[in-house]
Amino acid sequence: TMGKYINPFTDWGFKRLFGQEFSKPLLISFLNDLLVDELHVKDLTFRDKELLPPTKDQRGIICDVYCETDTGDRFIVEMQNRWQPNFLDRSICYACRSILDQVDKGRAEREDAYKFLPVYTICFMNYMPHTDEVSKFRTDIVLADKDTKAQVSNKLRFIYLALPLFEKKAEECETDFEKWIYVLKHMEALSRMPFTAQKEIFKQLEDYADSHRLTKKEWEAYENSLWVVRDNMACMAAAEREAREKG
Figure (spheres, helix red, strand yellow):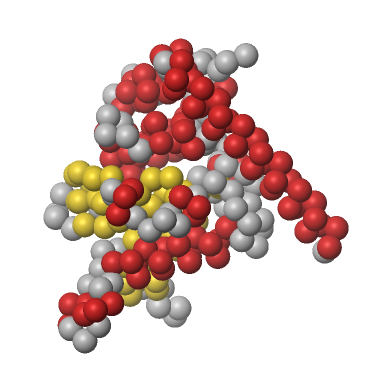
């Protein structure tokens, strides 16, 4: 039976909720709740897919945006939601590549050749991660001094969100960020959208996530995307089995 709301962790569902012009307010709200007390995103622009390196889609990067804060700072956000082997190593490689893509090779001798926008990588891990990868729901990785723990550069940032390790019930969610995570984690099984009375953006989320509002063409694209997720899960299970047998 069809759920009331789409699965946000299919490629199609994720792009519908976070990767469209019409749903920009959702992404801005999510990023501001994720990075609360750090920065405030005022606007964002989706990076032109035609200008991106062809490897982008193979990287499982589903959402690629330029963000501008209320203080005029700019940074790039890349969001991933697809399981891949060696997930952590891959995410580091992809972020480094995004930095290198910004550096003008022809200007290496000039002072401004190495000016580039910070790259924030946000990874949704909708599966139980390996304990040698992350061991808690949210892991924030920054470039910091080992002794003092002081951050030395904001140019690289990784945020890993392991959803199976988020165990709060709806009534236990205290922050807006926790409400987002609760809704995304349970969306496919929800019969009604919680928190709509407390936060206006969840009403918008409810509209865009409503599976009954999809056109026939959208529904077909979504169903195809669901099959890809199931295939991915099967591959992941097989890879884990193989690793256990070898180990």
